[in-house]
Length: 91
Image 1 (cartoon, rainbow, N blue to C red):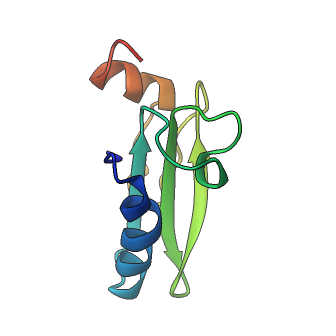
Image 2 (image 1 turned 120 degrees about the vertical axis):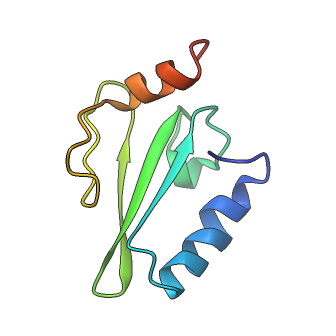
């Protein structure tokens, strides 16, 4: 989950996790706190999945009714909206 200090989640942690070879990193930004360059304009709840490919993170983002695709969690059969609604019904 994105903290109020979202810069740590999008800047610092992404770089640190890539450096220590974390295969997959999810940022679940249910409140659209991240900067526009990270979650788009207009800002909206976004799930960002970073996965390692040859030592560098690749990024795929999911919003609304788009089905989540995870290279690690291949059996996930949910949309971003379903994840947000299950944890935060008011979103």
